[in-house]
Image (cartoon, rainbow, N blue to C red; front, side):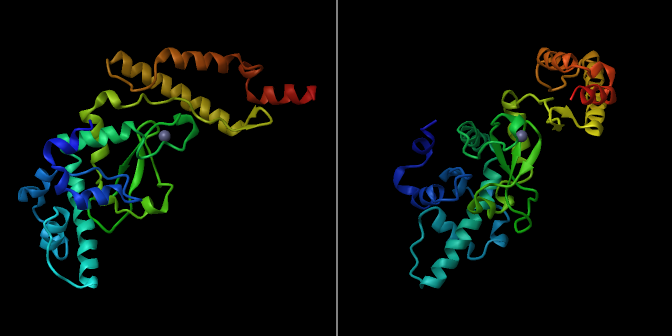
Length: 260
Ligand SMILES: [Zn+2]
């Protein structure tokens, strides 16, 4: 996949994008192809979103050669970054953009899920809004299907609209094999080794409901998306073997407490 730059972008035409991609804090972005950036069709409507649009586009595509003062230059620079972000949101849902982001995902460029039971599942960046200025980028874990804040403050200040609300879902539609199986493993609160009563009762009820639902879905020929059934059964057997559990949780507590 190293040939991404070489086949469409010649080395001397992507100074600004090279600089942008390699700047600290911009690790979530992939490089947008020159072809994509120079096709005006892909940029439809963005001239109303971005100040100094033409100058910003020139800067992004390395054809900017206007003499201007530092203030103006800084404004154009800011617009160029905003423009790049907005085009990026469109680019990463194209076949080529998805392939580039998939490579980054495989390299854990977006980090790993902080949830212990997700076992270092790689994350994907996503936005909660498609319109810029509403929310910052979040990280999506396909295993627990939850969102997380980026750890670094540099990443946490990136606009979520530069990734959009659909990219992470389209990614798994295009690459279904990369969708991790859902985990049925959940944290069980314990106090000195004993399950916390109310939580254990609720957890057991939820687990029974889940198993029942999975069976119904299987009978109907629907893929449940959960991890291998064998694994689940093993885990359940382990749980069943826990001392005193068949007797009910109250009995377990009483029985054990007497022994102490
Ligand atoms: Zn997770």
